[in-house]
Image 1 (spheres, helix red, strand yellow):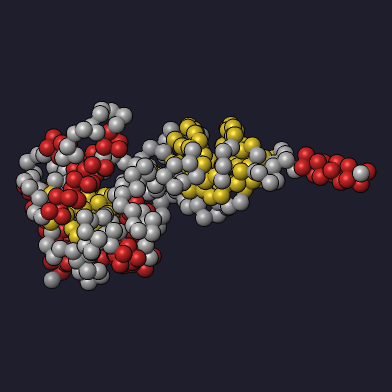
Image 2 (cartoon, helix red, strand yellow):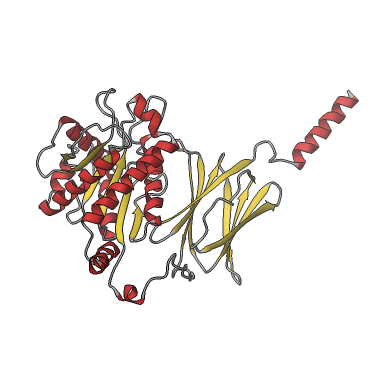
Length: 402
């Protein structure tokens, strides 16, 4: 009995000395992305946590103390270039706590909050950092020096807004093995954005760069806010028939849909917007096309440009994947209703089809689709360069030298 009592005392003392070792919340990962007005840092957690934050000056730092949390991931993969965060450090603090220190290039306004598990994601700590003024960043050297006459020309980048469909509480279509449309299209959109950024004469904006919900009308507003030269919404939807497969390209129609599939897709995509409207007004008993009727405008010229753009993109995709339709389809998609921005919706395949779904989740096929989309966009703008754009100037120079 004496030995058993002694053993129990030893075990109790070990548990007291390391109270968080068995049940500590793990900081598994960190993610970072930017919007126009803030920088968002998200810590993925294995469970709930208590935290506090405070700032220090000279130099500027933001400190986050997480009670009963251990760091199991690392922050080395975060792209901190051109952000207000110069470096991220972490270490043990107190008994079983973790302290994270953000070294900053200037003061920030912080908004932080915890998110419970939802939509397949676990607990998260979200930090939104706003700066009074953008950080001073040294301009990167240009890849190739340009002649003096080039600098004087009023040229600009072609602005492409890429919209990964769905996101957050709206997963989009779900495949037989749990594949989610919102994940597939985000990967393809990010790959397309990377390719566009590497091409001189193009600038790209992503409607979302992570897993969060954006209402359809907001997506249109983002395109107009950035004065986009084109808007491309990327999807991988489900079809009424499981045998339906292949890629499709859709444009807006001011009249009826060009096919039953186009009508079905428009109703499905427009209906997703009701998820974001419930806090504003009750639309559950309304027709999903109601927003389409409200938003209809006279934009024949924009639709004509969209059809031409869509046809070029469809031609590029034909060399990469099978096509569901060999012509550009039209229907009343709310996400395409920007009166002055040529807009297309690309169905990269049907996640409801077993073969399409199997390909869509592979990195190789996602890259091939992104390359095909880029090739189509580039070919369209080579034929239709916007006024004062770099590509228009480049073509003028070639004519002068011919």
